Image 1 (tube, each protein chain N blue to C red):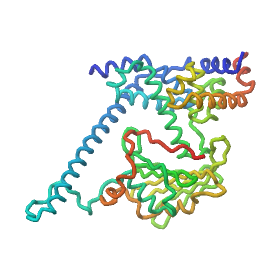
Image 2 (cartoon, each protein chain N blue to C red; image 1 turned 180 degrees about the vertical axis):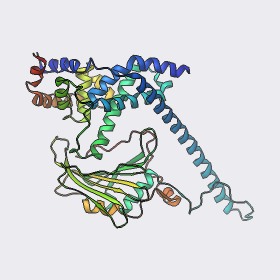
Image 3 (tube, rainbow over the protein chains, first blue to last red; image 1 turned 180 degrees about the horizontal axis):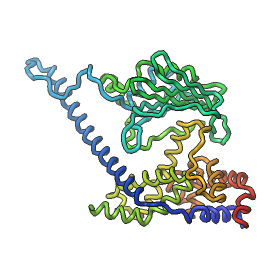
Image 4 (spheres, chains in turn orange, red; image 1 turned 60 degrees about the vertical axis):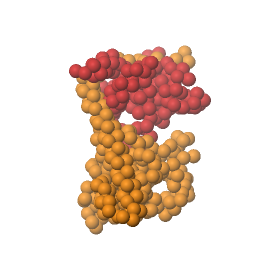
Length: 253
Length: 165
C-alpha cells in the first residue's frame, strides 16, 4: 500500500465518524449572514452618501467661482475640524508618516477588523524585506508573555498604558524558523488597542527593529477618531476590503 | 420562514456535517472547526441568492470554506507567535489516530494542509484542487509532494501501528 493510499484511508478513519450538533451552527450562521448583509447595505448607503457629499462640495466649489456669491453653502459639506472613526487608509497614512523610510512601503491594503461586528481597522504593507501589519481595535484582552517566549516583556508606561514587546522566530517558506516576528501590543487607558506586527524576512539585516516599532506604537497620533482632514488626505491609498475576513500579505521572499 | 432561509436550512442540514468534518481536518480542533463551519455557512447564507443559482452549490461551499481557512491562517500566522499553544478541543474526545494525524497536519502550512485535505480526503484531482484554492496546478503538485514528504517523515510507522496495520 502506498503512503498516499494509507494516508487517504487514515484521514477517513480519523474523521468520518465525527458528528456535530448542526442546530446551534445553523442559528449562528444565519445571524452572521444577516450581519454581513446589513454591513454590505450600510456600505452601499455610505458610498451613496459620500457621493452626495462630494456632489455638494463640487456645487459649493462652483459657487465660489460665481461672482454673484449669492448661493449659500450646501448642507453636508464636512467641516475640517470634524472628527470621525479612523479608517484603514488613515491608519496606513499615519503609519507611513511615522515609519523612518516610508518610500519602502509597497503592496498596501487593509480593511475592517472583526467577525460579526466591526472591532476596528487593520492595514498591511510590505516594508523593504519586512511585512508590517497594524491593527487599531476597540476591545482586546491584554496579550501576555508566555513562559515559552524567550524575548518578551510587558511594561506599564507613565500614562498608564500597557505595552507588550515580543521578539520571536517564525517559519519562513522553507519551514525553518528563519524569519523574525516583532510585536508591539499597546493597550491604552482611553480604550485604544494597537497591535503593530512586523515580520523581518532577513533578520540579520532587519528592515525594522523592535525599538522602532515601540516608538511608532506609543505615538500620541494614534486615536480611535481622527480629523476628517486626515481621513480625506489618505482616502485614496487603497480600497478597503469589505469583508470581515482580513487578508495578510504573503511572506516575502 | 422565508423561502431563502428554508432553502438554505435544507442545504445546511444536508451538507453541514460534511463541511464540519472538512473544517475539523483543516482547523485541527473541534471549537475552531465549529467556528470555521459557522463562518462558512454565514457567508453562504449572506450570498444565498447567488449560491442557489450556482451550478454546484456543494462545490461553492467547499471553496468558500477552504479559502476562508487559508485566509484566516495567514492572519493567525502574522498575529500570533508560534510559541502559543493552540486550543486542542475537548480533552479525551480525540482518538490516538486522530491526534497523531492532527499533530502531523499541524506542521503543514495552511495552504498545504488544505491541499492534503482536498486531495486525499475529498479525493479531488490536482486541477480541481487548484481551482478551489485559486492557484495553478503546478503549485498544487509541488505543494502536494512537499506536504506528503513532510507527513511521511513525521508519521513514519506511527500511523500503521495506531491502526493495527
